[in-house]
Amino acid sequence: MAVSHLQCKECRTAYPLEALYVCEQCFGPLEVVYDHDATRLDVGERRRRIQAGPQNIWRYADFLPLVGGPPGPSGRLGSRVGLPAGCTPLIRADRLAARLGLREVWVKNDAANPTHSFKDRVVSVAVTRARELGFETIACASTGNLANSVAAHGAALGMDSYVFIPADLEEQKILATGVYGTRLVGVRGSYDDVNRLCTQLCADREWAFVNINLRPYYAEGSKTLSYEIAEQLGWELPDRCIVPVASGSLFTKIAKGFEEWMELGLVEGPGRSTPRTPRMNGAQAEGCSPVARAFADGHEVCRPVKPDTIAKSLAIGNPADGPYALELARRTGGSVDAVSDEEIRAGIVLLAETTGIFTETAGGVTTAVLAKLAARGDIDPDERVVLVITGEGLKTLDAVRGTFETNTIDPTVESFEAVDGALGAASTPFGALR
Amino acid sequence: MTVVVKIPTQLRAAADGDAEAEVDGATVQEVLDGLFERYDELRARISDEDGSLRRFVNVYIAGEDIRFLDGLQTPVADGAELTILPAVAGGV
Image (spheres, rainbow over the protein chains, first blue to last red):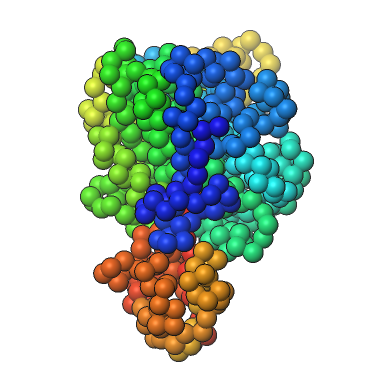
């Protein structure tokens, strides 16, 4: 395996591959470091190893922080152990592109994971590493999607789990967590309160908090999104990615995945051009936009906020990877933008009507930011754009309540014909996006 | 004012292994200065050269992030709890 050690992103102090997440010298975050030279593989061999792998994230095991390789007795069986994530569809969205005046838009639909969000990628990696390290209990602080995934992975692998959520979370996300038989704790407070509590609990318990003490491993799972996008585009990169931003971890790790493969020569640019890191556009809700605000103000760090938005899965007022997200957006010529709750609802409807994909509020944020960038003229019509959809609309049904009408009729032909002319003339709130 | 400072596990090696310390001070700044006087090694771990907090250090008074209050100038009540935590946890 190419995984080598942990290293502080700030002061570069090295640490062993254990359940550590903070640098003792400067409090900076720890990140996984690899030594791909050690495996002495050429581009063709690396690609063949990927293509011979299972149809899930373990095909990218060479680029993940697992010391023992893919889970299970062999690579082939790896796809049947636990709750395999990944290999979600990348869909060419021509009708969405046409609506926005663009030519090439792709939708990476990560709602097609086992618990219907991209969190299954990060949890699969964190839980597999937790087992390697000998943990028997997994836990998390969650805005909902992570709760679903940790509870389900605990059930699939027979591990005890504790899930901490804000008590006022969407009912769908609470139900879709408790059903797996986890120990579910609703905390009176915001996600940031939950996170602080869990950081304190983590210090004295022998639990693998996937997004706290296992965070360096957990975060690496997000890279599989970019590996898949590149592989699905025929070992080519997009010109631009639109990604939701809460803590900023997913946003930065998607770019890291692309850049790792660029360094190894595994990918080319669009149309076999010279590869460069795609422009990275972060998407936030106005009701919780500390990163977008810092971007607009030219700041290098984020001032925390108290979230108030329907996009609860993005409602992190104190974004841990904010400084890195800002640096990435600026370095790649991207941006971090924010949209209103009305635009988020319109974004959900726009994606649903043009692609058949029903996303949760976070995907509404991402779609609305794409529309905003297109309307602002930030995107060259010839660019290849990937829209990263991270979660499922059935988890946030309240967001689309009232966006259309159901016509109730008597069971007669006459009754149907009386309303037929008015059907489908829904009051789609596209105005909000323009 | 005497404040109870909760020291995170990652910093205990630089604080004689202590998990908490009672420190006097009227503001967060004064409490931290008192803490650094007792454990000199802590100063460089959580403060920049200019005396401000490093960007991955979060400080809470009674559970509230001091950035929502008056930052380092936030006044502290007698018997309050000051918690120092790393900022690297979190979601998406």
